[in-house]
Image 1 (cartoon, helix red, strand yellow):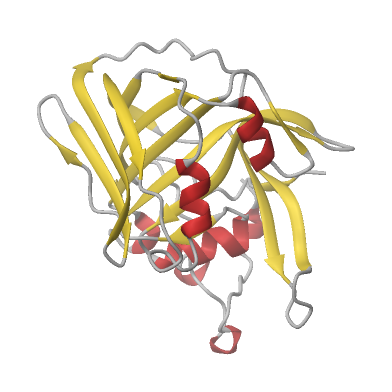
Image 2 (tube, helix red, strand yellow; image 1 turned 180 degrees about the horizontal axis):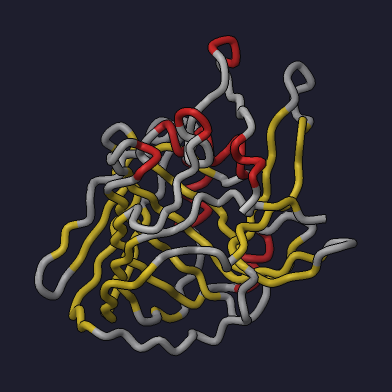
Length: 274
C-alpha cells in the first residue's frame, strides 16, 4: 500500500484544513480493514438483453460474456473509518470490457450505487469515481430461510428484493462470466459555468485483489428483484435511473446468494484507466 495516503487530503470545505475519511484518519492514521467492516450481502442475478446493456455503457466499454445483471444489497457494520458506525448499499452491475489505448481488461461495470449515508457518497464520488447517489436503505430482513431488502427515496419505494429457500453452503461455481480484473466505473464531474461539459471524465478500476475480506458464511437461494417505474414527481433526480433499470428485460433468473464477510480494503489502489 502506498504511503501517499498519509499526505493531507482535502474535500470541500477546504478552509478548515485536511479532511479525514476512508483512506486517511486522524493524524494520518491508516485503517487496515482486517476486522472491519462486518458485512452481509444479498445478491440476485438475471440474464437480460445484451443490446439494452450495451446502450448503458460509455463509448470506451463493451459488453463482455453473458448479459448477466447482478443486483446487490449490502449492509455494513462496525466500520473503522466511521468510528464503528455503518451504512447500507445497493448496486447494479454487469460484465464489461474496457478498451483503451493502454488498458484492455474485463470486469464488472457498476452502473449505479445507492448508499444511505452522505460521508461514503462524497468520498466515493469525488476520490474514487464511483457512481454513488443517495436513497433510504433499511437493513435487510433475514429469517431462517428468507431474506429481503428494499430501497426508497422520501417514501417512494422503487426496489424490492426477495430471497427464499436459503441453504447454507452456496455453490462457488462461476455463472459463465469472464475472469474479472475488478469493478469498473466511469467518473464524471461537471465543469462549473460550462454547463454540459466535464471537468473530468474517465474510466476507473477497483482492482479485484488486495482485500482482507474473509467469508464467514455463504448461502444459496431462489431470488427475484422488482423495480417500480417512477414519474418525475416521484423521483425528481433519479426517475431516469430507476426506469432504465426497470426496463431491462429479464430472460431468466439465476441463483441468488447471501454472503457474510469480515474485513475489506480502503480502496486506495483505485486507478484511472486509459
